[in-house]
Image 1: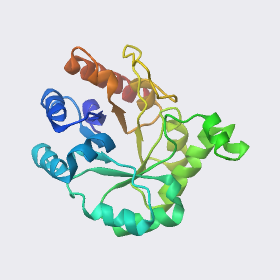
Image 2: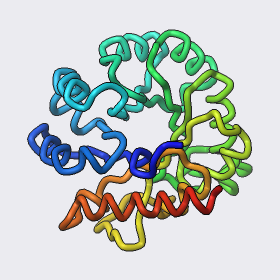
Image 3: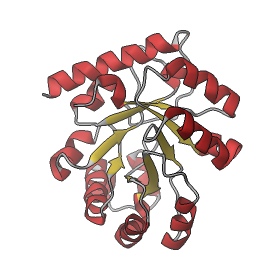
Image 4: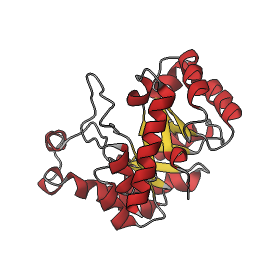
Amino acid sequence: MLPAKERLIFALDVADKAAAWRHLELLKNEVGLFKVGLELYLAEGAGFLQNLTDKLGPQKVFLDLKLYDIPATVLGALKTITTGVALVTVPSDLGPTGLKKIVAGTAHNVLAVTVLTSNAAADLQTLGYKPEYTENLTRLVVDRAKMAQDAGCRGVVCSGREAAAVRKACGENLLVVCPGIRPDWGEVAGDDQRRIVTPYEAIRNGADYIVVGRPIRAASDQVAAARRVAAEIARGLQDRA
C-alpha cells in the first residue's frame, strides 16, 4: 500500500518556473506527485516539463491539461509530452469513441475528468443536462466513470463527494483522483471550488490520490501543512480499511 504522503499531489498552480522551483524544493520530500496545470505549462512550456521530470524522476508529475479536441488532435498533443509523466487528463466529454481512440493511441496513463469540482447542479441545468443528472450529480459522475473505465482509461478525476459511489461502481482497479480538497483548518479566500471535502473524507470515501494546492501553498509553513494533510490521509486509510 502506498504511504500516506505518496497519495498527496501538490498543485503547482503558479505563474512561472521560479515560483514552481521554490515550492518543489520545500515539498519534494513531503508529497507523492506534483501537478502541472494550464497556467504553469502555458507559461513555461514543454522544456520546463522535461526539466521537472528529469529532476524528480519518472512518474512524479501529474500533467493536468484536460486536452479537449478531436481524438487526432489530442493524440498529436500527447506525442509532444515527455513519457516521464505519471498521469495526463482529458475531459470525459470526449465521449466513449474519443476516449477509446485516445487511450489506444498513447502510452500515457489517461485520466478522464468527470465533472469539474467547480460545477454544481445549477450549472448543469443551464447547460441542458437531464433532470436525472442535475438532481443527482453523483449519478452523472458514476456514469462517466464507468464510460471511462470501459474505454480503457487508467482512472478518473472526481470530487471526494462522489469517490465512494465511483469506487462501488468501478471497483478497485480504476484510479480515483480527487481535487477540491479543503482541510477544516485551511481556509481559502475567494474559493471557486464548490463540491469540496476534507483530505480525510476523500480518502475514507475511496480516493487513491488527492490534489491539494492553495491550503498548502498559502500556509505560513508549507511543510507543516503538507504533513497535516498526510496525517489526515493516513487516518482516512485506516478508517477505510
